[in-house]
Image 1 (cartoon, rainbow, N blue to C red):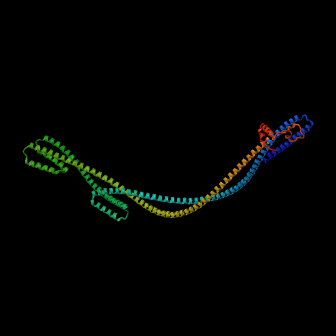
Image 2 (image 1 turned 135 degrees about the horizontal axis):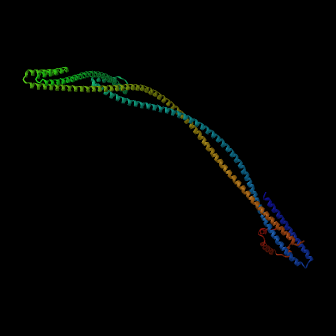
Image 3 (image 1 turned 90 degrees about the horizontal axis):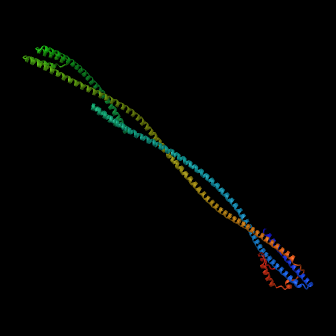
Length: 576
């Protein structure tokens, strides 16, 4: 559509140039005829007019040639424009056909894309549904597995708790055994102490008690530890009772001895008191006798007899009559043997008094030593009795504590035995439950494995379908990309065609402008020619009349053409 306008303009301009050429030829003919008519009239001025006419004709010929050259160039450009317009029209037709095909392909691709997107959405929905179902199955399986694991953990925790309780009971039992062994050692040490005490008192009964303990050890059908402990406890209790009886006997014996000692001490103190009183009396009598001796020096025998009588009375009171007897015998012998000297008798009497006083002093010292020894033995016996009493009290207290603790241990042992039996029953029940749960878990695990295998198979099938759909989607995406590339190429070709059309339109506009300028120049030239050239009515072919050489004419025309514009030189090759 855009190319038809410049072609019509070019055809119009060519027609105008043809009309101008014909009008110019007519004008030349008219001028020639006018010149011929004037030749007949004016014979004298013919040469001058012919010269002018030839000059005008030459100028007109030159202009005509230039116009012919311009027309030729315009015709060539017109032909080239027609060829280019035809090529562009063909290209436009091809582009329109390609555009229609591309639009059809785009429509087909859009429909195919819609179909593929629908299939893809359906596949996605199916995959989503399968994923949701698989997730639900997985959640159910995981929930079941979690419940089973939780139950297993509960069973394990119960087993661990029962094991810990059994371990605690075993530790407690070992601790009790250790405590029993310690108590047994303490009981044995106490037994040995009691045996030593009883051996110190009586050896026969200790052997009988030990034999009875051995008989009990053989008779009792208990455990080894409890049997030994019970035997030792019973032996210690019997030894303690024996020690208690022995201590009671010993205390009674000591009480008797104490009473006897107290009685002897009381008698000795009385004797000491009597001896002290006798010694005082003897000293007083001695002083009185000495006074009387001093007064009666001649009465030695009376003096001796008085002294002896006084001493005899004192000793008889104390209980030493044998000494007085001996003393009386000796003075009787002395009285019967010697009555000769008074001084010798006095000296002997003094010696007897001195010997008597020394014997009394020795007796008193011996009595005092015996009293002190008896007091020491009494104090030792008292301390021994007190120590034995404290020892017996402590042993009785320890025995009572041991018996109480033994009773507590027996009660705890019975309770522990019951707890152990209950725990063993619970362990058996838990083991049975664990075995049952294990079988159930194995069955459920097998079922879960089967379900998982089925799910894996379904997943593999779905993965294969997904891969197929992905491959189909990739192929469709490739096709879409190719079609998009083709559409883009078509669009680029269409854009290039539009740009070429725009360039052709611009070139046609430029040619139109140039043609308008040329037509304007032609019109100006024609107007100038019309204004300058005279009217010729009849003229023949000017070359014959004027005898113009066409070769010279071509040379002149070539020279004139050199002076033309470069736009007009392309039109010189047009032949009428």
